[in-house]
Image (cartoon, rainbow over all chains, first blue to last red; front, side, top):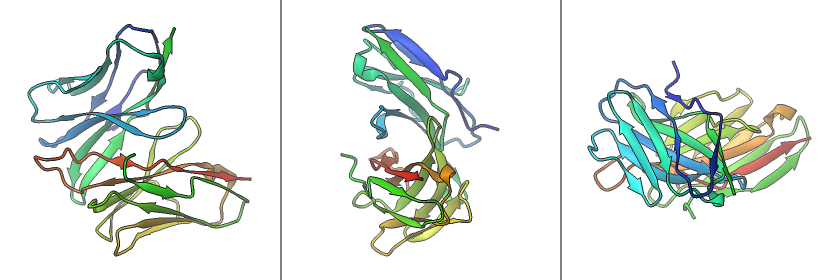
Length: 116
Length: 117
């Protein structure tokens, strides 16, 4: 079974609008972490936001927020007031523990295009 | 700047050759992960090291090998290269455990772009 599922291969959003990128995860651990990374066309992987499984509040970092719904095992990224520079690939990731230590799992990514 | 250094940034070589990619993790990070990203693909986990020891293996081909040295830098060796090995190879480091003070996220290097002709 997929540990991280991103069902939106591509998304379009108008500049200055908000957009939600979907992510669902699968783990039996009680303690885990959820991450979003941005990969612009230049290729580097940029850490955006983190949500711990025990965090009661949704994480926020500037224009990024993570809509964490634990019972539904979803960790959607919300980008508010989209900018042209937000056009990039976005990856959802999860860290849980295996018998070999922390393991990270990545989704297949969502390509976001911001339209002027 | 993530603090993770990868060299070389770009590499062009021929089929059948062997290359070595190098990674210096962030200061203090004990875990190193290697990922392969082919064109328009997601990240494929290759292998993980923690404090010099192999911790986990993903979809790493037998032609590929890696190691982490006592100073914690890591090398990924790719041999008998094929056209399909052309990809962006990422190294990422992590402290190795999450604590109250850090989230244990992965810090990525800028990647080594390998082109096999």
